[in-house]
Length: 309
Ligand SMILES: CC(C)(COP(=O)(O)OP(=O)(O)OC[C@H]1O[C@@H](n2cnc3c(N)ncnc32)[C@H](O)[C@@H]1OP(=O)(O)O)[C@@H](O)C(=O)NCCC(=O)NCCS
Image: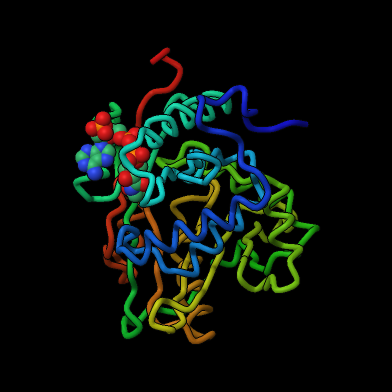
């Protein structure tokens, strides 16, 4: 099945992602990172983003300038960037139009982008008609902040993911949990299966929770990541925590984060990060009571799609 928009469906000057584009995109990301434009983003995360684009090419469109890659838009990742040498030539404007068409084609009513707190980015977003919506906070837990060990209630069981066998159930439960989330996330089975099938995938980075009386039914999970930061220190990341609605309010989220912190620290992580939307007040409160503190603000702005602009 063809996915994403074809070149003909995109504005002039923008085309669908092609295999190999990730190389130019990663090089452009590195230039932006070196210039300090990507506040709060560690370098290894860039390679991961570029790799993800290559594995889900239908989520990305690319601007070209005389045959050279000038910029890209990936609405699902809230990402629109124009490489330094190609700015103020209208590529950003064309990429916004492409992003709106891509968002509309997947049934979204808005195009949402990360707009860093910089005058150029904010001027661009304002000129194009975006409005501020909410911020994603990158929270930080210091290595010395004590966090209690997890203690899950007796009516649940926890286990690590079984790659392959659990993939579809993980996607289902994550998509159910994050459907009405302030920053909706939609996982695709293909992507999750690919990540889980990688030779280096460590099942002990994904903890699943199930009711003790129905062990096949996943009701919550916590996914971890870790990488060397720009100074070479191992940094932990509590990437995704979720509990299905019927099981919320019983402390499972708190135990899942405690488990994540303990697991990351036991692997040598110092600082631990966690991202949370500013509108998700309950989650923010939970993480703050565990010792996480706001470190970087990533504002998100939106523009409606499909109004014929
Ligand atoms: C923000 C960014 C995407 C703009 O891309 P671009 O291709 O230069 O944008 P355009 O040429 O289409 O500019 C459209 C309008 O935005 C405004 N604008 C863009 N850059 C600006 C700047 N540096 N200062 C002030 N206004 C700016 C202007 O009104 C411009 O119209 P004009 O050139 O006719 O005056 C680009 O600078 C970039 O990738 N920055 C780093 C990543 C980033 O911040 N992404 C978030 C984007 S929402």
